[in-house]
Image (cartoon, rainbow, N blue to C red):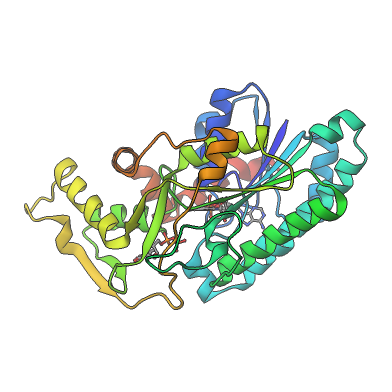
Length: 354
Ligand code: NAD
Ligand code: TYD
């Protein structure tokens, strides 16, 4: 079986759903269930015999040890993290704990477990670390996209904590020979993304008649990748990635934030017109910029394309159309998060099982 940490979050839950569709191999989801962890994402597989769940914190060393010794995974994929830049600005402590200390704990437990495996299993074992392009810092408009050799220059507490975790993974490969692979991906979007991030926040606020807050003048640029394309890239890296290597993953889709917001508004105008006949564009509001706001992210994904044969299936237009449709079809999912009802659902479903 494989372990996925942070499997109740946005990318982790998409990965598990995708994995269970394609493979007949069990997956254990290890998640602390922070505000960003939502087991409702995995409702469609909760009774599938190939899906298991352990509510465990990466800071709980003994809990992690127990899980590896009991289930003997052939691979551990680390998605768990505090992931929101704005939250890291208001309160960096949790980012240091989970992203740095948590990854360190997971590496320690993995190393101890891996080092006593029989040779064949030891050779085939993998530790896959899911990271971000934000570790490379910020680009100017004319700079070449980030490649795997771009020096690390993280600018936010979030990206600094992720950079630190990447360095630990690198060190565990270099020093102890742990068979690791790291992926550094650009901004994801798609189903089950918590509505604190730009795309789901704008869709949700638009439909609720609220302001659409645009930081600064909206000219900051991000590269966007549909989440399922990211999940496919991670699977390929797990299967075929060279040990100790890092792979950049991106959609070749650089967009200014303002373009993203405008496209969401005009798509919603067609799919769910406002009752008063006005455009959702009228809800846009320019607000105070994020401190230290990175100007531009862009990814050169040539290495993963050439070495592993990965290419994104969606472009921004097709991926965004799918995403908007998903949010329109799943307003209860968003509603539950926003109202906190999904916590009640958790208590109802898991409260009596201890
Ligand atoms: P998310 O915030 O949606 O989910 C994170 C998950 O980790 C949640 O389920 C949460 O409960 C869990 N978690 C947090 N702290 C934990 C702890 N101490 N122990 C166990 N579980 C814990 O994040 P996401 O957007 O799904 O991102 C997943 C990974 O991908 C992260 O490592 C992130 O840095 C990376 N990444 C994200 C993006 C993006 O655009 N979202 C892009 C590139 C890389
Ligand atoms: P976000 O989704 O938070 O991802 P990240 O900061 O990791 O790139 O933000 C994407 C971009 O959108 C980023 O440049 C900040 C901007 N943004 C807004 O303009 N308004 C918002 O309300 C949010 C959440 C983000």
